Length: 239
Image (cartoon, rainbow, N blue to C red):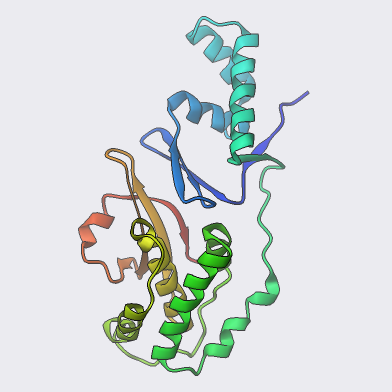
């Protein structure tokens, strides 16, 4: 009988960086770093590598019995299930979104930029407070670029109302401000017809994480553009 397949939970983003698996838990905005063995076991559980071949290889490498290796894999799987990192499911399973929400932002097409900026900031602040980061982040994938809502103007001019409006909105805790601010900016730019991309990037050593918005591959409101080049993209919203 083939081993069970697992997929990352809807609230988890995962990527290998420098040979180690990096997990972002959207529910609590915390990161976990897997060692090389944990990363290899994750790959087996999610069907990226052949589990049977790995078991034989590890039994030889660690001079352990097959049963011991299988027990180790099972313990890792149970731990990931309990922490909410993995769930049982079929490979290729995709998250379903509420399709009815996709067209709602069109209502803001003709609003002034200052109103759009304040609305985006307020919406994100309230959503984070009431729904939490995971659901707020998930809904950003439904925000589409509104055609015809952006007059021909330099990007610096378009973002000025956002910079002015954010002086009136205070997000929760300072360490997480980049997440809240970047989501609000992403929302605002798409309402203005700008095809913005939201990015969460990390560096493993020394560990650093940051969230920002890009337009045409360039960071927006980025005081340290070179800093972004040192980070590997963990997850992004660009569709």
